[in-house]
Length: 171
Image (cartoon, rainbow, N blue to C red):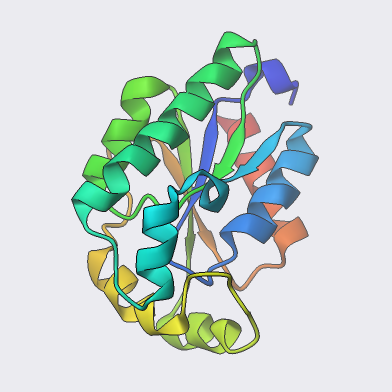
């Protein structure tokens, strides 16, 4: 699929589901730029998460606005962007879409035990595994009326990228 036909993409899900790894693979597959949404968090959010405290909606709002702005900036340059961002709640996704209305959300979904197992092999700068349950509790899966593609995290990142590319082509 030519990059100019691909909408902005947000690879979403709870920590440890593979957003960054799969997001990079999707961006490579579609020849699009990739941004790790973690890099857009303000320092205060990073510090809060590093201390083991989940973010509140108020904490997340400036970060979600930065995600939306990054997508809109890409569109202004004539390109779509792939961003890894948890986007756990519908209202978070709505806020992102307010900046880039055509955004599609790629929901990486899997069972808690698999994600928890993955977290034991990961050393994240500021997101401790103890926050997984708060993320699962917060997660609102894509609604039927939301533009998105649910993807099983049992697939390898290259398989996820190929699946997403095929799903976008089929639309």
